[in-house]
Image (tube, rainbow, N blue to C red; front, side, top):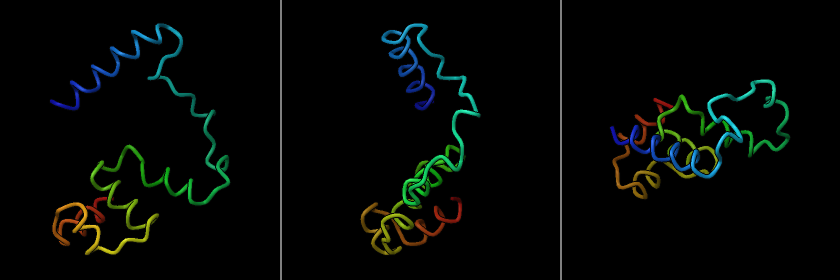
Length: 92
């Protein structure tokens, strides 16, 4: 419910400040090419932040792969257990 409310608020703000300039729902798939990004780290960041991955799992995946944190450190920093971190990585 909270996510729907946030999306509605964002859409309202965008409509207020960017009326009819662009439609954010329509993204041209030809516009973004996978080979367009030449930096491997940046490409990996895009993979870690895919919309199909839950946000909590995106965070854990990014900390593990991009930053090189170990499971114990990620759990400590996110105030969660190591088992929870492993579950989030598995979901990602």
